[in-house]
Length: 130
Image 1 (cartoon, one colour):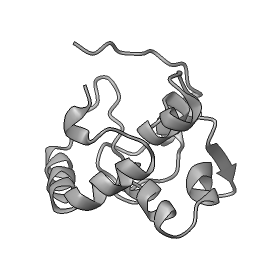
Image 2 (cartoon, helix red, strand yellow):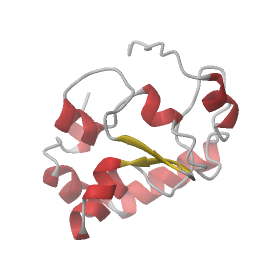
Image 3 (cartoon, one colour):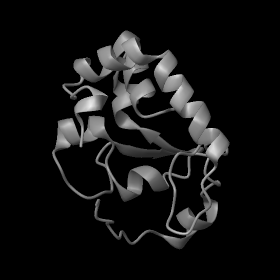
Image 4 (tube, rainbow, N blue to C red):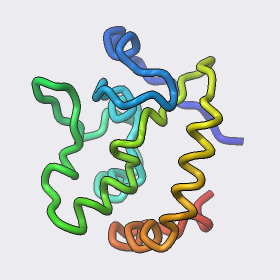
């Protein structure tokens, strides 16, 4: 059984977070609370906030994506689910099962591309993760 990590976050981030599956509004809560797989490769296992978390007038952004170009940038965006809706679920929040099914279908459709992107960043293939 996976252990939950409790992270203290600013109330304004919690109030701004969209519902699971709704479009991302760049609240930054997901990156403030924990590191994605790609950031863990770069920065090691640690609790958030992510060192790649950056802010501009419109909200949060990923420093890794900002610094990357070309295929590396597209791979990073794919791996962090950029532009595909809020995938962070808070304790007690209702899961959007339609959104989960859409993301699962997209992962199957993009299977080879995901595998190549994971390889680029030194991540194990998804089926080998625990």
